[in-house]
Image (cartoon, rainbow, N blue to C red; front, side):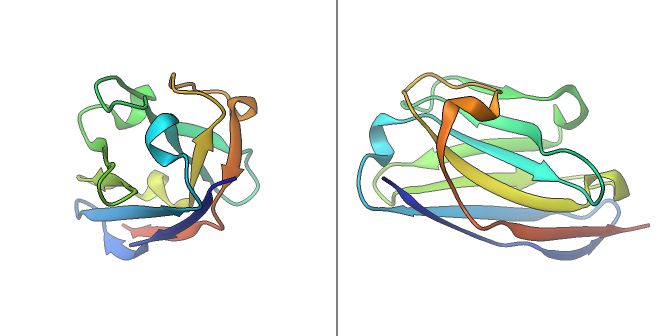
Length: 124
């Protein structure tokens, strides 16, 4: 089991940037795909981005393509989400998750371990 802790959330104006971090401990980080999800009030949790075990393959939902970048540093057991050109509709609690396997997936069922989440609020 991997323990995950997110950080880097906060309040930012529309058009601004934030970088989220997800620190992993407990082993197995380098062998597993990782993902970011978000959940806005009154909405279901949705996939945002994923990265495979090697970092060579990444996936994004259409609404964040060109604005968000997912990356990982296996030496630091940390995953990142660089968020630029933020919009009010990006406001949500952001969760990082570790997949069961090395291949990235957009489905929540593919992820076994979850962090507690970090709040991102974008004001207009």
